[in-house]
Length: 177
Image (cartoon, rainbow, N blue to C red; front, side, top):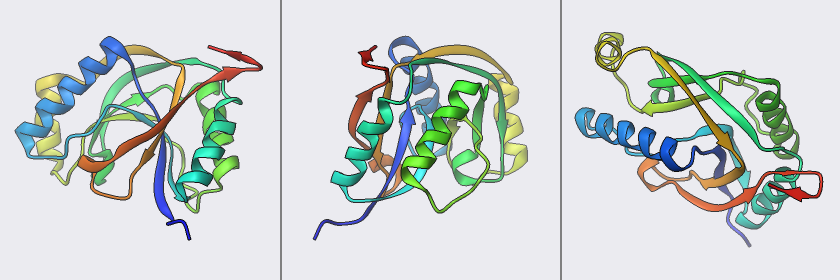
């Protein structure tokens, strides 16, 4: 019998945007002894199933989403491990629709409100520590990147061990972009 695991669907910046965010995440990770992870916006997390069924559903989902732009705006933080310090993404109609489609395909147990963001630091830090970091790197973060692939990540283990199972091109109709 196939093993049930945990997965997430990610939208990853590519090329220069990926390098820039990865460098900042690495600096913060080293400085604050926090997990190192790839820059991404989680389209949907908390997915469970087998590799085969989740991969098949992700492939079908990708053909329903058109490539789009993600605009990042300002830095913020929460008292949550995985939203410790992050950059907000503008919740455009396209991004919200992609999230809605993913929820329809995977029917996750969590009904949390969707907060599209790109995390920069994971951990349990005080508000004072986070404010200090923001004072150093600034709150404004006007950046845009193009999304043309959906990445399926296995998230069963600690963040340092999360890994990409497969990426799928986003498609509009029968055209692969």
